[in-house]
Amino acid sequence: MDCYICRKELTGKYYIDWWNHKICESHLNNDVVSCSSCNGFTKKDIVLSDGRVLCHVCMDNAIKPGDSIEFIKSSVVNTLNKAGFDDLRTEDISIEIVSAEKMAEIRKSSVNIQNKGLTLSNMISSFGLLSGKNQKFRHTVYMLTHLTKIEFAGVLAHETLHAWQVQNNIKMSSKLTEGLCNMGTYLIYQTMPSSLTKIYLKILHESSDPIYGDGFREVYAHFEELGWQDLIRKIRENKTI
Ligand SMILES: [Zn+2]
Ligand SMILES: [Zn+2]
Ligand SMILES: [Zn+2]
Image (cartoon, rainbow, N blue to C red):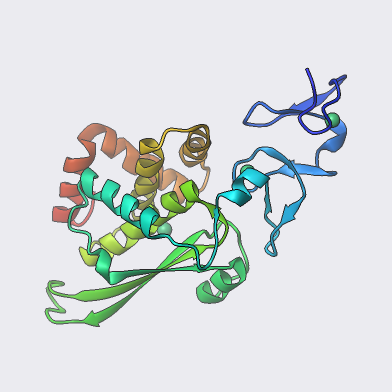
């Protein structure tokens, strides 16, 4: 059994990552860390300005400002449409890829690489303000730069469901709001089976966050009982779950 990094035979204590790569004890946190994107062991060759370390595979797949994202956007929308979010008005959604520093500036918070997406919705027409009908919004989705294509799609689905909730005048608790958005991420990863999506799904299911993790598990339980179509219909009609 050889070390994934130095290729020498492993003797004594060693570490294993989620990809089953094994490394000598001496490498970890020294010249080797976990890739910020896929959690696999990697040398610290590629360090982003926000502190993330990417392995070469994730770097090759990273979406950066200026990259074409039309294909990812349309496949995300397509998948959401098929599940039952068929009233999405995507023409009202624009996407910007930004650095973690820029993301922090927009959120008015400190730099946090866990903030991978943010949707800001602006009302552009308020006819029927009281009834909530005929309101029109423009949504700007800010996406953190250097996400892998798959993660980009997952985060974009989450953000798109924020826009969908605003478009449908749905105002739930932040737990249910984020939980439903994470169901969009779940849907994307579920429809793209790979070793990477398996890891992302594990992270989604096991998140200990009281809003994102607990919210996801709560909405997921409703989904298991109702299925996509009925879950979406219920939320659209009752404005909650
Ligand atoms: Zn080694
Ligand atoms: Zn990686
Ligand atoms: Zn969210």
